Image 1 (cartoon, helix red, strand yellow):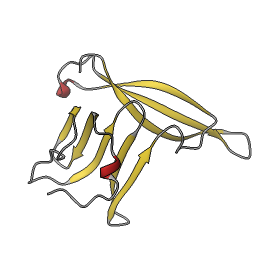
Image 2: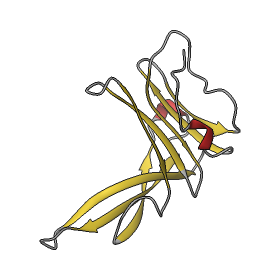
Image 3: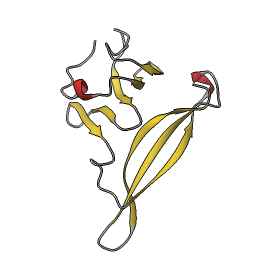
Amino acid sequence: MMPELELIAKAPSHGHILLLGHHTVLLEAWHGGDVPLPETDTLEALHIFDETTEYRAVWSEARGRYLESLLTDDTIAHECAEEERMYLSARFGDTRSYLIIRDYYAIDEDEAVYLAGYRILGVGGGT
């Protein structure tokens, strides 16, 4: 059963969905509609993304609720950004497939660089 998520209506209407359930991992093209979570599973994390926006909902055991975010280049404070590829396991089919991740870096008051956030931009390779 899908939980009540307040920001999901603002998720991209097209792109990809990455769903992590207690027993389910799903990565596929997204064209809006219902989130395909099996009724017997529990949602741990949900990412719906395109090249400009990522909707993210992650279960927080400490708070007893889902923490939702709508992420863009403008919503993550940063000094610079860098893209990386995160290759997927054979469980997703073609092992040449990868997630395109944008890492956002900031500088603290001691001028140390730290990872301020990330967002998923897309899927590349064989998917």
